[in-house]
Amino acid sequence: MSSSDISSTASVIALAMLSVALVLAFIRLARGPSLPDRVVALDLISILAAGITAVYAIAAEQPVFLDVALVLALISFLGTVAFARYLERQGSR
Amino acid sequence: MNEIVSSALMIIGAAFALLASAGVVRMPDLFTRMQAATKASTLGISCVVFAVAVHFGELGITTRALATIIFIFLTAPVAAHMIARAAYFVGVPLWEQTIIDELHGHYDRRTHKLARPDDPFAVLPMTVDLRRLTGQTVLVGYGRVGRRIGEALIANDVSIVVVEDNREIVEKLRESDVPAVFGNASEPGVLIQAHIHRASMLVIATPDTAEARRMAGIARAVNPRIEIVVRTHTEEDAAALERANAGKAFLGEHELAHTMTRYVLDRYGGAVTHS
Image: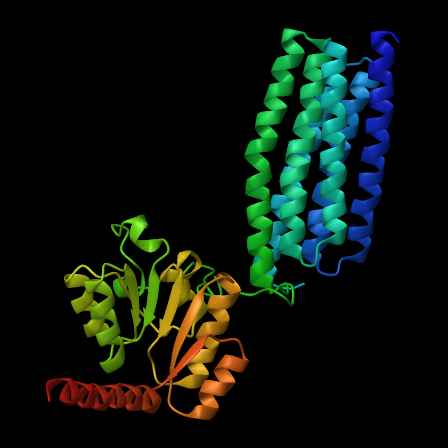
């Protein structure tokens, strides 16, 4: 088995696991029950998306995707902080 | 070689991310879900990004990967803290089997500021040696009964922490270098201040049985192996306490009768041997 075979097999496995993780996070997003639950699920989804892009960078041999992962992580952070501030100000569910 | 390392990192990272998602679905309340999501996803994604750095093995890519990892490690805790804090204010319910909400009553709901107890006697001073707060005896009440127990324990070099709802007594105890906490021990925060989780024994020398049972419940919840000794007044209370697994109950009249009987028998025994 050549070295590129190993990493392509591994990236397929990792992508499959991350996809399952994404589905699970979506279940929590749909179920809630409270708004903070959904925010946590959404945060997890975007961080998982960053992970998927990073794995895809290896699978496609394209290091540029790493920048996409960084931007996704940044956006997820900003989104969560904004949600948290909104929740604390509004005090409603 | 690099391929194997990066593949392993990738799989490990994906596994952590999967665990995080499983935790988010399976955990019973928001706060437990969050601890699964934040920890595992941070570690998981960092592993995957690190795998990218190892896979390409170029300086520019490694730098970017490290920057991403540092960014995730800095932002994830901040975001998690903010959302947990907001959720707590909004009143997201805790799991029904939650034992203690240590924040309860400490937040000002209007200003959202953490109100520290103003009273210095309500918290143990930081100067108390941690060795004295390990395997110690927590003595609740330092009145007529408690003081005698406390003095005897100190005389026998047993390290104790006193919980008392009389400020002056707490002040005096601190002056004589006995760790003491001011407050009602039937509130969880007060017993936690007395480091009940590290204690080996809880001695309840206060007269109120209902409160004693609550204290025993808190102590058992925080520290399941703790030994509990309770003072009671009636036989029904003693039986109820021991049935509720609230520890060994001592009845004032029984102990008095016991000691008096022993004295009388001693006198007889003494008289017999002297004659």
